[in-house]
Image (cartoon, rainbow, N blue to C red; front, side, top):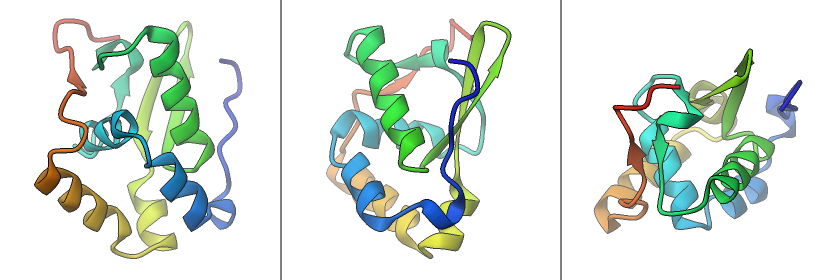
Length: 116
């Protein structure tokens, strides 16, 4: 994944963010990434194949929700919390609160034994 493309903050649209968050796995990934830390892809645990997890991460990146950084053969991902807050004030907080209330994405977590 050389030179991952990330939309500029002005290119992030409400419809692309909402479409990206229409899948419970992606909501779960956002919940996991909301801890203010950068995580290696190998740390992320979800009940899907690695290729499907990679697809979900690409969708989140393309929507402007996450930022991916490559270091050698490893990839790391963070939530674009500040960009989302600037573009859509309060949206991420509301989504995270609703996801927690409804327990959306609970099947996604961190594999703390496998730091990437």
